[in-house]
Length: 239
Ligand code: NI
Ligand code: MN
Image (cartoon, rainbow, N blue to C red; front, side):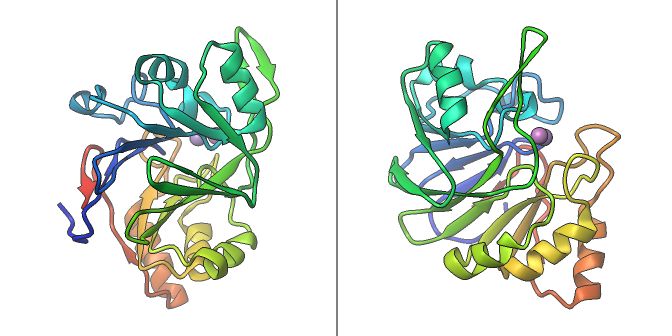
């Protein structure tokens, strides 16, 4: 357990999926992919409750469990408009759409949608359905702590704006390379964001995702960026 002592727990479920338990006991699932997620420990595949799910984009490794969990736990689903329409068509009623630059509150957490450079098609029955644009989220917790979940993205200069506007305490950044930033780009992202802590994600799930936290530490050192890298193990929580 890595201590922050702010009354919340942020658990990495492997890949780009995180579970946030807030001070008041609400559960927020970021990018619901646990069932088929080879990195997610078995013990973390079941939930007592899910109050909110956020979806960063339409790819299966970020929303494969959205329909199942949406039906089982009736969470508020915070996502872009196109994914909202798609999920409504699948029978979910709790979707709460938004777009970049906007914020909304759910379960005592404020969600701000940010830009991301990636794609967002939804694969369904061999067809590619338009899933709107990919995004990231800044979560502002009850105590003011800000967590930036970048989603899948390249490094973008918008991250300087995210740093200026929201000054995230914790940044959850993809580092795996190939489909997202590698550690080299993530270090430049960290320089713009100025977060105290960086939790690397979207690496190690498959052999093709080759970036490692050690490489990120090395790249940060080269740039003189002071952010601390907290490399969680899947199932491990930052509390
Ligand atoms: Ni993706
Ligand atoms: Mn992905």
